[in-house]
Amino acid sequence: MISIIDYGVGNLGSVKNMLKYLGIESKIITTTEELSSADKIILPGVGSWDNGVAKLKDSGLLSVLNQRVLTDKVPVLGICLGMQILLDCSEEGELPGLGWIPGKVKKFDFSQTLKENNLRIPHMGWNVTHNVKKTQLTQLIDVETRYYFVHSYYAEVINKEHELMTCHYGYEFTCAIHKENIWGVQFHPEKSHKFGMALIKSFSEL
Amino acid sequence: MGLAKRIIPCLDVDNGRVVKGVQFVDIRDAGDPVEVAKRYNEQGADEITFLDITASSDDRETTVHMVEAIASQVFIPLTVGGGIRTCEDIRRMLNAGADKVGINTAAVFNPEFVREAAQRFGSQCIVVAIDAKKVSADGEPDKWEIFTHGGRKPTGLDAVEWAIKMVEYGAGEILLTSMDRDGTKNGFDLGITRAISEAVHVPVIASGGVGNLDHLVDGVIEGKADAVLAASIFHFGEYSIQQAKQRMTDAGIEMRL
Image (cartoon, rainbow over all chains, first blue to last red; front, side, top):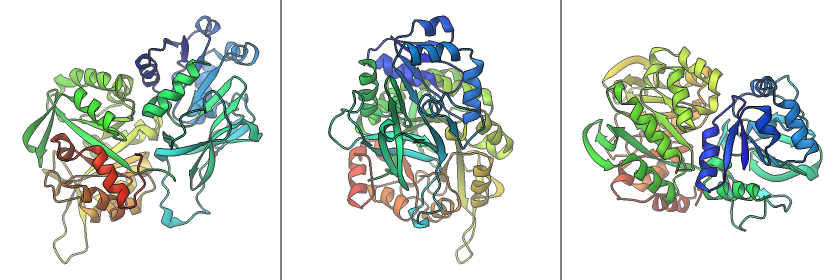
C-alpha cells in the first residue's frame, strides 16, 4: 500500500490513477494516524516553494513524517516540488525545506548559454535522463529514457553520491536524488507513460 | 540529446463527441473522446489537448466525467480548454485529472483572471490560448489581432503584445491558433508563430492549418514553436503520430520516439 500525502498542493489524482492502472494499492492520506501506518510514501507537489513548505507545515504531518522517514526508514518518493522540498532551501523562497538530503534548489540561469538555443523557462516537455548510479529505481531498460518535465527550478545536491539521475537543458542538472530510503524525481513519472510506469512500479517493489 | 519538440493531437469535443470543423463550422464526427485519447496515447503522442466547444454550460458535468475517464487511462499530460472562466472551473478540471487548463476568451475580458489563476495554481498549469487573425494588408508591416467567438469578433488587441502581457501575468505556455488557417490545411501562419515565439520566454504551441507532415516541420523550424498541435490529419487516419514524429526526426528535429 502506497500512501500519497495530500497537503493541498497539486494534482494527486494523476499519481493515484497510475498506481491504480498498475494494480498497486494506494491511498490519499491527510492524517497522522494514516501516516503512522504507511509503509511507502509519495510526496507530490506543484507550485511555488514557500506555498508548498507552508502547506506541508500546516498539514500537521511533519513530526510523524520525519519519524516515519528518518527513524523507521519508510521509503519515500518526492515528485517535482515534492522532490525539491527534500532539500535544505530554495532560491524561489525563504522557508527552510525538510533538509533530508543536503542541497539547495536553484533557478535555471541561461545567461551563459547561446541565445540561439532558444531555451524556454519553464523547462517543459520530454527530456532524456541519465542514470548516475545503479539502484532499484534506475536499473531500467537500457534504451533512451525520456520523462516529462515542467519546472523552472532544479536540485543541486552538496554530496555527489546523492545524485541519482541527470538531464541536460542548457547545461547538465540533477533531475533525481537519492539517499538511503529517500528518493526524489524532478520529472513527473505519473505523466511519463511507460518509463514513468516502470519507475513507479520499481518504487512499489522496494 | 535534449528536450524534444512535442506533437499534441487536439480533441475538439462537442456534446460528448470529437468533432472537427473547418473554420469552426461544417463539423465532422471523429469518435468517442476517451477512445480517441487512448489511441493517441498508444501511438506516442506527447500530450493531449481536450477542447470543450459545447455551447451550453449544462454539459460541463459531461466534460468533467470525460476528463476523469481520459486521465484514468492516459498517462501523458492533458490540457483541458473551452469555457474556463473562474478559478472554480480550473479547480474542477485539475481535480478531474487535467494537468493544465487553457484560458481563452476569459483572459481577453478579464486579464486579471490569468494572474489570479497563476498565483493560485502555478504558471505550469496555465495555458493562455490566443486566437489571432492577420489584419494587415499586403505590403503593410505584418500585424495580427486577437479575435474571440470562434474568430468572429475582433478585439483591437495586438496579438504579439497580448502574448507578452499574458506571460507577464503568469501564463506558463501559449497556445497560438491562426483563425485564418484553422481548418484550411494550408499550414500554420508561420509569421505570427515566429513573432510570438521570439517575443516570449515560455513555450509556444503552434495551431491551426496543419494539412500535411511538412507543415509540422515548418512550425518548429520556421515558426520556432516548441510544440505543434493538429487535429484532423490524425483524427481521420491520414497520418499516425509515429509517421509525424518520423518526418520531424528526418528533418533534424529532436523528438521522443
